[in-house]
Length: 343
Image 1 (cartoon, rainbow, N blue to C red):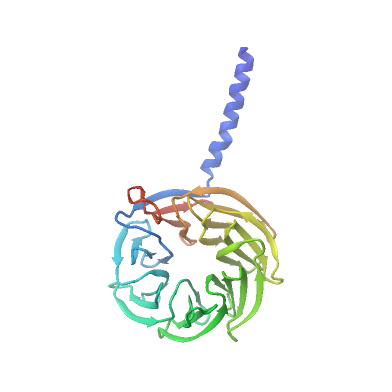
Image 2: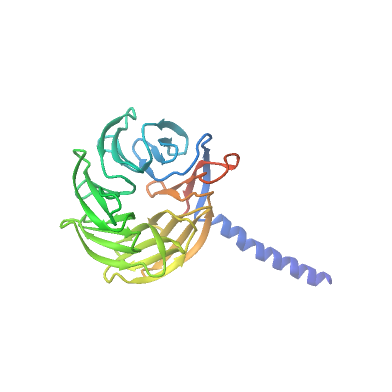
C-alpha cells in the first residue's frame, strides 16, 4: 500500500472511531454502583422511594422480603414476614408504607417506616399483585383475582390509605390485569386487561368500565405510562416486545416501536422526553420526537431478568434489580444497579 493511501485509510479509521466514542460518552445512563445480593434467589417485583429519608425499597417476591437500601444502593435492612410481596407504596407524611402480598392468598400490609414492623393487615381475594395510587382521593387500587374459584373475572380492591381500610372494589373482565395508570385529576384509570389483550378505561367515580381498546397484534401487555399533555398512553407488551402509543381521545394506536424482551417496568421522563423500558439484559431508551413519532436511541446494558426498575426524576437516577429466576445457583448474580441519567 502506498504511503498516501495508508495515511488516508488510517484517517478514515480514526474518524470512524471518534463518533462511536462520542456516542458512548453521551449514553443516556451511566452505571455508578452495583450492590450484589448473595443468598437471594428468584425474582424481584417493584421499587419505591423515600426521598426525604433517602431510602429505596425493593420487593423480593421469591425471597419473601422487602429490602431497604440507601439511594446510592447500599443495603441497610431486610424486612421479613411476607408471603410473596409485589407492589409497594411509601407514604412520606406518616413514614409508613403499604405492601401488596399474594399468590394463593391475598393481603395488603401496613408497615412502619421507623422500625419496619408490620402494623396491620387487610385480607383480600387471592392472587394479589400490582397496584396504583390515586393522589386525588388517597386511595390505593390493588389488583387481585376473584373470590369465586374459576371465575373469568378479577377485582380491583380500593384501600383508603388514610384509614388503612378496604372501602370497596370493582370487577373487571378476564383473570388478570397487569398495570394501571390514573389521570392527574383522579377521575379516570387505564388498565391493561391481560386476558382479552385490551386497554380498559375506568370511570373511577362511577366505578364502571367505559371503554375497551384492542392491543392489536400483541399479547402479554405489561407496563404503562401516561403523557397527558399530548393525550398519549404508552403500553409495553412481551409478545412481541413492543411499545404501543395510544391516542387517549380516540383509543386508537398511533405507532409502535420494538423494545427489550421480557420487559416489565416503564417510566416517562417528562423533562428529557424519554421513555425507559426495562427488560432482560437491557433497558430500552425511546425518545419522543413529538406526540406521534418515537425513536429507539439505545439499549442500556443491565442484567439477567432486570425487568424491575425505578426512575426517580428528582435525583436523575435509574435503579434496576438483576434477578436469578430459572438460573442455576452458581450462575446467579442478583444485584441492584444504580444509574445516573444523563442530560
